[in-house]
Length: 151
Image (cartoon, rainbow, N blue to C red; front, top):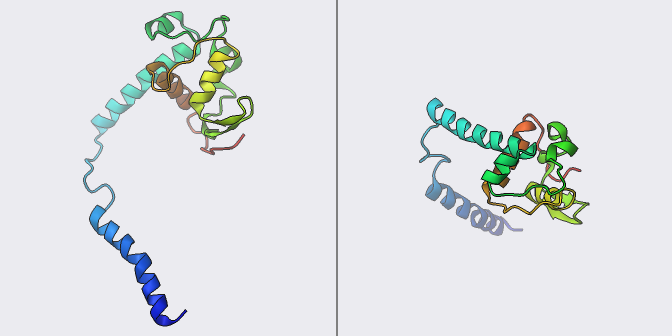
């Protein structure tokens, strides 16, 4: 390449990035700081979901009824196969899941377990029950290394 062509190529590639940086501004420029009180509020909401997920995971019939879900028709609870959420590996999702023969999310795997071994009824991905189960599983694996796609 000649110097002129190289210079135009560099400018052609750099100008859009510079323009974007000027338009967008510094990251977080319009973001309010998170105060300790706000962080505490977030943590309380999260832990309430973890508590509900814990109850669902361990087969609490009253919680299932209150959340209008049927997680098992066999009398099995998630915790019977996954004590202390063992072998749930939430940090490895999304990944190809051999049992389902497809690329899957943690939510897909939760529903597979509900429908197949437990013969329960699939729950909606955006349902409060799914959010609670996911929150409990992630919370219980705190400190795990995130490694999506690992088996």
